[in-house]
Length: 128
Image (cartoon, rainbow, N blue to C red; front, side, top):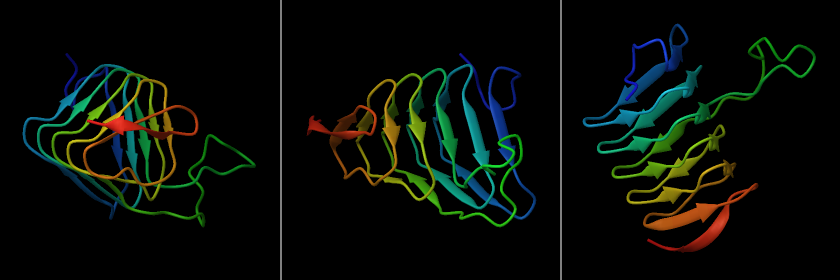
């Protein structure tokens, strides 16, 4: 299993950004977490392989660059959350405690506590 700091997990926190990772967070290989502004990951979170979490926009003219003047918005992942393989969490998203994000989902809006969301774009499936 990958952990922050191993080569299989890409964790980038920009200078001046605020990043918090709670206790007992499991981050699987091939995950990319890129924090330019502010990101909070709660306790007992499982992040499956290939997940991407970002709190900013990319530069559309040159997608290799983080947009210098683009929007940034805090990402918050509550306690006891499971994020499925290859899901993408975009800027400004709040995922409530005990929620589940299905594999391959693209999350662009908040997920309430205790709900399971799936798809692209992610939508409510059922209560956990």
